[in-house]
Length: 506
View 1: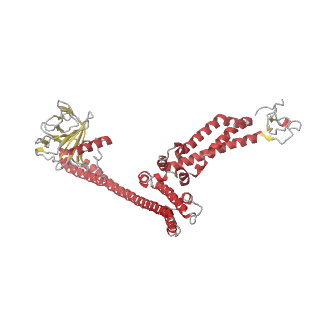
View 2 (view 1 turned 30 degrees about the horizontal axis):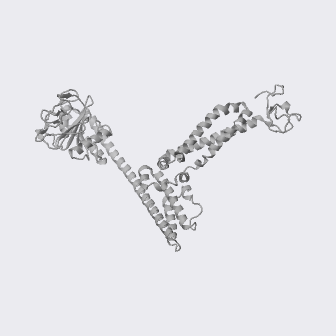
View 3 (view 1 turned 60 degrees about the horizontal axis):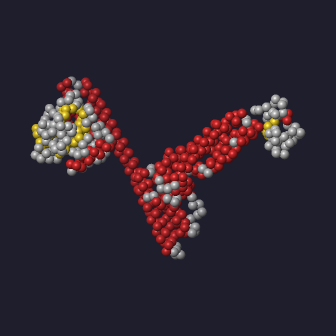
């Protein structure tokens, strides 16, 4: 603290706030020696106590803002989706709940910054006059907080206050598609409160009690209980012999709203049951897949100890187990895309392959992975073991320089030489259209020493161990490239090394 102005070299301990005091104008702070009737004939006010009181006011403000900010943050983590949805129907951004919550965040930042810059040091040093000079700022901050304190009761009641004028614009379908079960329950309570107000208007307060916000403020009330209660009051309104035509029209509208809410509630219940069932099915499937995976691991351990003469037999058994796992996975999730492809790795590629199938006149509805080089090996032998006797196969090839090509045929890959297939076609992911087989041309070439091979000459041939050589190539022969050269969109033969290859049955 500062020294007293009396010259005694004592520190000031008291503050003079009495305007009638003879020393008020020249000695607002004074030491114990100046506490005499000639100088300060009034009760002394201790600076330390006064300073602490002002500091407590600032800390109380800071804590109130932090508590409000924390409560809003926690609530928005659970219910931010419904706020975002409802905000979208308000034309004035400043009226949205998100804007008000942002005001709390800004206020918290402003107060903490102001406290550190102006209050903290003066409080520690007990500089009461400086602290009192900051009172206008303290009052201004308190006014800002008071305008936001209604958010302490954040919940359905606050949502009603903010969005009651736009609730009629929002359909149940929009909410069902975007909100969780908990948020949808809040939305239904808002709708039911709107129905309650309409019913109260029809009944002229004869049946519904004054506690109209009970639907919004009582978390113990279930949606079913609220609907049941409103149906009872609606029945009273229906039986009212003195009801006007306008009242009857309103009652019909109210009944329609209640029925719609009831249907939505029933639908959400079914949806919840479906999700639980879906989760149970997924868990059961995962258990089966895990069990099969464990069996495969055991087989792999046995394979390492078996003699060479038995190796091929156990490999076949291993492949059969792997196909069984794939069957479990595919039976659960059949979607209109190439499942689990490592080559068609993004949505754009998936959409493009769908477009190619549409161009061919065939819809892509279901796919089953038969062969993948990085898992099964890049040998022609394994390719034929896994893909022979399979019709409707799609081959996808990725070269080491990033080119993605392939083809589709309805024929099998059994070892019987050239085969015709009017439905066969090739594709290049850099091209916009597929390349169809020419009339009466050989579509594929099935040969045990080759991988998937299309056309005479060939339009696309995948050689044995294609990942370790550049023997695979593409010519222009049996397919129509619309003047683009060959499958790799070049005029000369295109040789390449394979980075990955996949074959799917459709």
